Structures are given as structure tokens and as C-alpha cells.
Length: 477
Image (cartoon, rainbow, N blue to C red):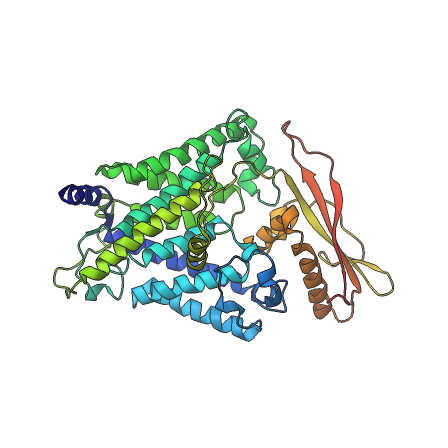
């Protein structure tokens, strides 16, 4: 027992989180949640109602796992979806200002799970990280500073619990497991990973256009990303009190993700990764900013309930172990599988996570879509460009074709051989949307065409292939 106590004291000294850093993370996460709501709200009908391309009746047929749930599926109407988005916004604002923080955190987490489960096919790794950060925040005092609740708490400057350790392991896991999954030649002998990533026109931004002209620089960046991903978790979990260690980890996370976000169109992914790492900032760094107030000794003291504290720590250890097993399950040398009852818990809490960003291989097939509409008389019309002929030339900047990263992710998923069921749904949605918005130019049918352009190892592209993804008519159910 004495040895365990000494171990906990050591852990506390090495892995404490500054209350102000936690508060900054709360504010950042709340702003990300609000930004995500605003982005999704623009396509509320398309992605979250029965009038869109993913009606409720199909949800349990594809991608749904035992234990999943979503109150966004109670109704497929636009009004109900709008109500839920409004409630989600109010809760996120409460979290932002730190009012009833713990309650707000719980409901923001619940709403986030429900929203993610409503449409699984527009999600990316950043969504998993956001959802899991909100989970660990349920057990962290991130409302004890820079909040309306702060006056109610007597907080120590630093906090340690198994939940804070779980949070640190989460951030470290993002990088160590994506590095372990990068076992292909693209990340090692060929060092071609960045080249292949920047070859994807649906992702490449102007900075990526510039980088694409320098093969040697892309090879260097491939190695730099790989070794940075190895170094970050070491710095986060290294048992040391040196302030520069965790500050260096945060700087590396920030620089790497700014580089990703400025060269590749990844939506909120890079912002989420930076924001959720704010809590690792050391106290010595935050002391330089006088406007970030520390807790006041005159604040009201609240009696802690030891039973709840022990339960929280025990539960945190259990979840921490589950998360490690989930990540290890993607390793080729790890063959242990969780029992079905445990999987139900994992799915119910949405602890699911996979940090295979561009791992082990990078998608090499890129392309663009055409919407070939036909009137009842057989007249051809380009529904995307609204032209009386088909504009089949490759767009100069393909990323501009996507209204948001959610649409880009959907387009990427439609390319996958295991997600072909998305293609007719998308086809029907586009056809119905066109006829609703163009009563004087009605289409009878639509051909969804994909022009595939593949990259090869010689820094060239293969001949473009025209592929017919789907055909739909106004008479389709």
C-alpha cells in the first residue's frame, strides 16, 4: 500500500495539469464545437433529415454497430433536427463561458455522440478526438478557471487524477499509434507519403501546389512527419518536471498541424488536434500571461466525496485500459478481441478510435464527379455547372468543388469499394434537389460519373478512367 501511494505521488508530480491550461482547452473545444455546428447546419437537410441522402430508415443497415444510439434518429424532420442543433448550440455556449460546466460538458458530449451516430459517413479522425476529449473532460476540473463557475471552486493550481492521465494518454495515442501503423514503404524506404497525399487534388491547397513541385522537400517532410509523430508521445508521457518537455510537445503538435491544415483540405481536423492539446501547456509558460488568472484562495470550498473520487479514478483506469486495447487491436501482431458485452459498452460510450491518418498506405486514386442529367425528352444537362452540355475538363482547383470538408469526406467515401451503397443515395439526392430548385428545367434521370486519376511512384498520373458510379430516375423509391 505504501509503495502504491509513493507511485501515485510520483505520477502526480509528473503528470499534473494546470487548471488554467484545462480552462483554455475548454474554451477552445467549445469554439470548435460551435464551429462544427455552424458548418453542419448549412447542410442540415442534406445530412440529418429524411429529405437528405441519409434517411433514418437506412441508418441501421450500414455501419451501425450494436450499442450505438442517437436521439437525432427520433424524427427525420427538418424542424426536429433544427431544434436539436439549437439545443446543442446553447449547451456549447454554456461550456464556452463556463456556466454549469460539468453539466454542460456532459450534455455536449451526449449531443456530440448522437450527432456523430446520425451520419457516420461524413466523419473523420478529428471527430473521434473531439468526442474522446469531451469524455475525459467529464472527470477534469476544466471549469475551475476562466469561467463563470470559477468563483464557486477552491482549486489547487494543478490537478492530477487518473482521468488527467487518461487525457494525456489519449493525446499521446493519436501520434504513437498512427506512427506504428505507418509501416509501408511510403513512409520509410520510398519516403513518398507526402507526395501521394499532395497528389490528391480533392485535398491539395495552394501551399500544397507549391510543395508538389519539390520532390526532395516532400521526401524530407515525409520523414519529418514520421519522426515528429514518434517524438510527440515520448515528450508527453516522459516522467519529468522539466517545463520545456511538454511545451515542446505542444509546439510540435501545433507546427505539424498548421503545416497539414495549410497544405491539405482537412476541415477542422488540424484545429481539433491543436485545441485538444492545450491542456498539456506547463504552468511556467502560462505564468507569463498575467490575464490568465489563477484560483483565488477566498473562493468557496466544496467538500469532496471520497467515494465518488475513488469511483471516478477506478472508472478512469478501466476506460484507459479499454482505449489501449482498442488501439492495440489495429496492430497486426495483437490478436486479442474484446468480448461482446464489453464492445457494447465501448460502442455505447463511443470510445471507438482509429488513428490511421494516412496509414499504413495513402489513397492513390483521386478524381472528380460529373452529374449528367437527362430530361424526359433525352436532352443532356450538366447539373453541377448548370450547362446544356457536359463540362468534362478537370477542375483547376478541385477543392473548391466542395462546400465543406463533410462533402469532401462523403466524396472520398463514395470512392471506396465497401461504401458503394452511398452512390445511389447521393445520385437520388442530387436529382431531387435539382428538380426542386429548377421547376422549369426538370430532369428525368441522372448519371453519376467519376473520373478517376491515379498517381504512380514516378511522380506522374496514370490515364484518366471514366467510371459510371450510379444511375437514378425520378421514379426510384
